[in-house]
Length: 402
Image 1 (cartoon, one colour):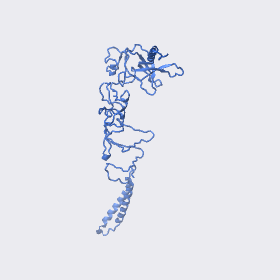
Image 2 (tube, rainbow, N blue to C red):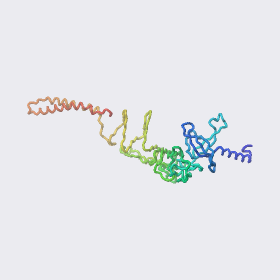
Image 3 (cartoon, helix red, strand yellow):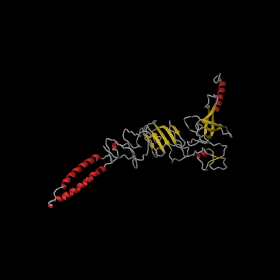
Image 4 (cartoon, helix red, strand yellow):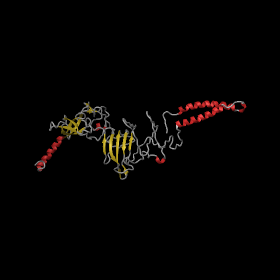
């Protein structure tokens, strides 16, 4: 009657299912990871582990990553679950199976590495100053016998004991790399009126927030098994996408004297609402084909401790209803260069004509005083000709105003 036909058959079917499951799911220690530049990249050689112990001379099998679009390959001596599945040429060999592996198991709760060396291999670290994970994995801090191999989690992988996993608040979905890089899909967290983290002030429970972090605070101390949270002011690079949260960012410059008081933006660490904050040692925006555009409902503020520099090989165009230079309260008008030059030419020409007439006045008898006036008028007229010739030189060849 099959598996469900009766008690005996049911028990027999359950045992068969357990045996089949045991043959399909295996647990093993990684002894090698394929790092070639081929489609074999990521395949591993795994030392099969029994449930209770590792057997000496355990079977070695080869396994491929289970997921094609997510790459989270294990390191040497990390453990993985292995499952049997169809081979890639299953249509030609319907009965053919091969091994696939899941991502590394969280053996020590460490996001950097989770090794468990083979107890039958005498190992030592490259130095006697070993990491927490190595010591907890059974490697003695001072080797008392001659080692037969060196403990290495990879070919060039540097094990770090100061990478702290993130603390997950209720409902969070978190993806973490091995080096303090992470993405948190979280929310505001308040318990009995008390914010549980720095982003939960002036916000409502469950309001979404996404935090992308690359590199944690270098000054964190304690055991690598300690949990931490993101710190936008001390992490290496962060992107925070908020909905209602107030983020305590320490902006490098908050000098808003160019604004009238009623129009000044809210200080970065006081604003509560939907915004995107990017914080790092340096920001670079670049386009390779088209425009770089900034659009704002209110104002665009450029705020710097040292200077604001604009370099351009083409035109620099500013079109605005009003332009204030030097102060928001500036009230002196800028002269139009070409128009001013033309006006000065007309004035100087008229004065030159007057001086020409004055220089021709009769200089006898000398007692009339016209002699000195004529002499001065002639000299000034000659100077005016030079002034008029120089007017074109005072105009800028690059700055134009309307």
